[in-house]
Amino acid sequence: MAISHAGVRGMDLPRLLTCTQRLYGRVNDLQALLDVLAQTLVELLEEIAPNHSNAVHLVATAGLLSRRGTGGTFRPLRLKGRPDPEELRNFMEHVGPGDSQSPTGLMGWSVARRMVAMRQGQEWFVAERDDEKDRWAPLRPASGGEVDEMRQSAIAAYPSLKSQLAVPILDPEIRGQARPRDAMGILNVESDELLSREFCEFMIGFSSSAGYPLLTAVRLRDMRRLTRRLSAPLSRSSLAGGLLDATLPYLPGKRRRGMVALRDPHADDCHIVESMTTAGLEEGLLRDYRAGRLRLSLQDGVWGEAIRTGRTLYIPDLPRAARKRHKPLWKDTQCALVIPLVSGRGREVLGLLGLESGETSYAFSTQDMGCFEMHASLAAVAAASIEEARLEHVEAVRIPALLQRLKRSSLSEVPEDQIVRINAICRALVKHGFVYQKAAEDCRLTVHILREYTSRSPRIIDVDALRTLAARCEENIRAAVSLESLDF
Image 1: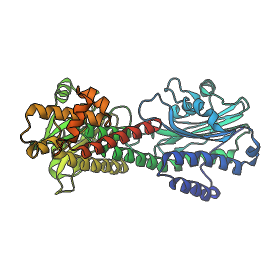
Image 2: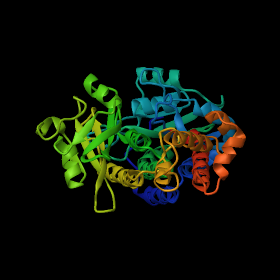
Image 3: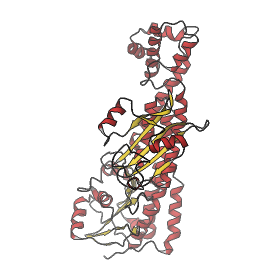
Image 4: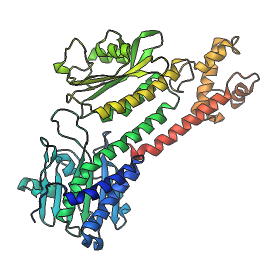
């Protein structure tokens, strides 16, 4: 069966636009968007080739690749079709893409090779990406080596399945000059009937139009996660770590580097690096970072320029730029982006988000920079809230700022050793959600004495503030657990 692909024909464009419009209506919910994608594939197949309506087994899959080193699985992944695809979920979630040498499943082969893969009975077809023209080449019969690879990789969910089409969803944004687009997800259809040429052409075109709404949904999802994380009680290190964790997965390739520095509360012209990627870092810099001595000043290249001006600075091709302007933290950096954390009060620079790519120059798109600037704005709000002394995260403080304020007023006559004990009691109460028995064991007191501290009049401890903090910590834990299955 000879199949070619010259792009979606003019008569199919209205249908393609209608399908894409459905996706944009679900960008606020990534799971719902993937559901719509998988369901749309089923509906399109039955509309374009009605004989598939009678197929006993018909499975459509829409999934995104893990970006967090979870073994290359497609997560999250949604399935639609017949029979109930829920029985296949465990099977499908552990399929592909494997690695480039031994991809798993035809979906995994398609993503690893960045090629369209198709099985029609005993025949195999592929389509390659023309990176120069940035479009898919026509489907062609697979070579002998490609057939062997696909046969070895393919896994059939049901013995009766006769055809399968796997199309990678490529990154819709160009990051790097003449750089191939990376695969970010997969569309897959399997059926007891043979797939028609028209459907294959349409599905390849549809995969290109699905990239932007999928990336938008991922960004909105990650923005909500970062907002929840930054709304929790934070220390400087936990704020910096949260911002860096939310941003690094968007960098291309494996050599993703970044750091977050926050303004030194004792020196406005100095910023302390609170979180950074340690892989590939020189031993001296690594030692200073771990000791808390890695600082950035107003004279430190692009870092200092961003602090002085409060503007985002982008060096797209560092090897060709004047090295005197910027000294990167990693020697093989090709591209650098610096985003200041600017407060709304007088445009003070409270910190810096610095990102460097060791894989490619021109690593960041305009949309990337807009997304990262939003992340930095959220972090700036959180940084402003911990600039003044306050009760920080229970595992990160010594004497809470709450007690520092009370010490100046109602606790002015309390000895220092008692302040230390009150601090331990506060942390234990928050840590154990006001379960007095556990808190008493933690701070080595009896429940009776613990209740004494929290019931004196006038109060030594602001119980209402501590209860609020404990409730927020518990809410964050529940949110983290509920999101584990979506983390990719």
